[in-house]
Image 1: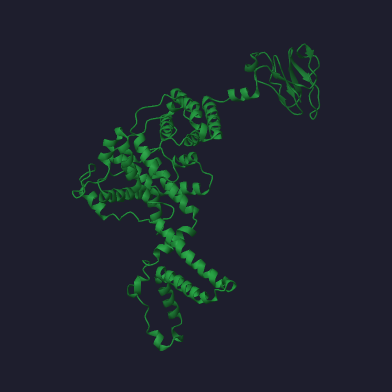
Image 2: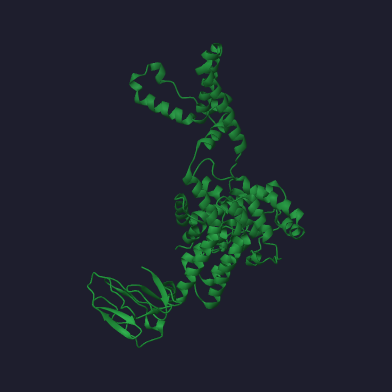
Length: 502
């Protein structure tokens, strides 16, 4: 059916209903619109209301000659649209101001997301202006709009833009939990044997620091190299054993079998000594009546008495850890580490939502927090000011964010695979390097950085302990976030929704 625009009305009759606009649209309150319901079909004309005698299942026809279009008579049965009035406009006008802003904000952010990272910064100008207008009007943004806005902002990979958006959302009243746990951080204690330029003299905290375990070691490069070398030796022995006869290498087959047997046996015994001893003892006890008397008096060897330290894992532990790192794929484990990093960043007020935090981003975050100048470029006016992080507490917050995945994984698994404890230590080195090349940051950074490796170790241990405490105290939220990430469809905005309890 054709749709036509003429003045002054919309008229449409169907088998069981008639479409009509409300009186305010036409500004003609004298027209009778109450008859536009089931029953006798009525139609609105220039002369008023006319009754159309049609059956319930037939289409109502518009009387020929009632309306004119461009000087000609409208054909019967055509739909007449009011000039400059669309159904979309009418539906939109029926929404309250909050729903209108929500719809527009979501649409603008969807356009930014569709445009990708290349145009995200420029595209965010209008959404940010819109939420500023909402703040000035006292209109609280809805959850859907905030989620879309954060997803669009994440495309910029700019912490200052994210800080501005989150700040606007907090002033709007849409967000409450960003940075809500900063007050739970315990500053690093200053001990007499460790002359830091920050911290406090609380003896109990000093005692706690001295009792903390070291940050787990992670030499994944050596582990992977050892695993690859071991795999190459085993593969070579297998190839010789299978294909040696085809290439005249029969003489090497016994040697290959011997090397293969020794290598595999050594790895198994060295890393699973306790399991083998317990299993062997259990089997011997179950069949004690069948064993000869001489065998009944034999005791299992102790790992301390084994040659070359076999049984302790010191000989081939690197190979076993490397094989585990190469062969294991655990999505749940990865998501737990990602959830830990996102939660700590959000709870401590850090506008960085990298699923896998890295030292370079951490160093850039601290340096950016010290900048005060703003660019004259229009797109850069959407950047906000970061909280100053060149302090003892600020440095501790960034370290907690970097080491949060380690705290999560080390609390659940004996080996670190998804997280990397080296990032936190490298962060301190990168921060020192960057400060040397940036004049305005050099003095402030030098005042907060540890002076030597021993002080760095203490600071990392404290950060690990604080991150672990934060994660344990908020285990339910972190688990919910991990489950959402494991689903594979969660965005940064979805993560914020979980952190806000939506």
